[in-house]
Image (tube, rainbow, N blue to C red; front, side, top):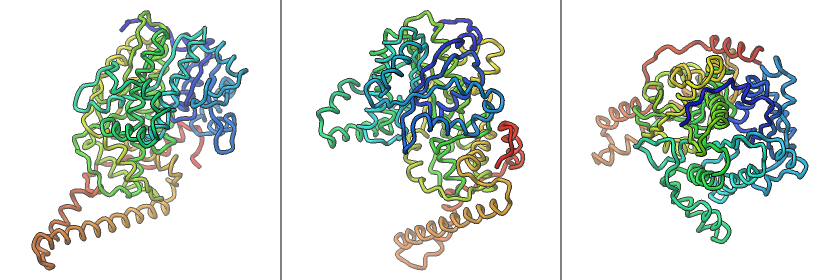
Length: 495
């Protein structure tokens, strides 16, 4: 890796036009807000958005601009919103479905490409995952080859392209593929649907889902098809809500750790069958956004003709141990539960359980990038996950979910008390189920319906061991303190 002192980020991005796919996604929105706020020299940010639900791409983006995430931009730099230019398109179409006039403009002006678009369904049918995650990247790369001003192509991947390597140290390189990516794409055209989907079923046993499998193969497409481009592969781990560069705990989707915490907060996830020593390799989205910006800047300055792989994660620098944050998560869930039930518990756990095992992703490049940055940029673009206090972060995530996803009233005492009653109902239901199962077990073992000496202690032990509300209180912050910090970040009162 080149050790290059980096000029200020704003100087590197000055007068450049960026082209971004996946701008309407969680990471895309946060990254664009960060760019508008901290990189005033950018000339233009061209975003690709497909029409959906009867709304044009431009209408969809205008709704996104109204989110509380963009409060600081609307309040302090409203003129910068005009730098975002929306063009309609779809990565599943040739030339990304862009009109000829828009395409000419993108090809002529673009200096940097951030490819973040992908299917958001982890367990999507293989056909859909191949179309969006693999064919999509071939289409983007094809356009990059036609951009005379291109200085960086950043492909946003995931650490879990190596989900088949649990229990080992995964380095920042691309490992041999499980199959030829181009041949898999070709087979989609002639294999029967049932046979093609059987490939996805087999792959999911090793990779956890079709998302990780196809994203793994997409990296090999980048290595082959973008070999002559100034490309890089950026791998975040499980992305969580905002840490400190923005609204604490803000998130806009039930994905990853947010989905699990929501299930806990509603009482819908009564048991957490997870090894307490397990690590959840999560990374705050504001660190991810800053790391993508800095990584792309580094790629522009690189002298080497290789394609670097950059991990953005926590497992080697500051691992989140589930057993260490569980008491905070449980106490927060009990004191400030959600008013509405979260029903996607089975799906949540099925998706996450693959990633709650022993993964270690080596993280060497980001710490070195911090050393290359100017002192001012190190403060503006925070990359150091070692500074994150996970218990404080978990508290903010849970309150952020409650406010911004569940739309709960965090001030009204009656609302909180009603939520607590809902959680108690879940606890009672859970105890009854445990009681019944232990009774049946004791009858089978003893042959007697009166074996209370066995099933009653067994019920109590099993319920106390498995219940998420069995924890040692540590004293979480007050809901008023969280409200104050959120309102300071938003610049307005919570509604």
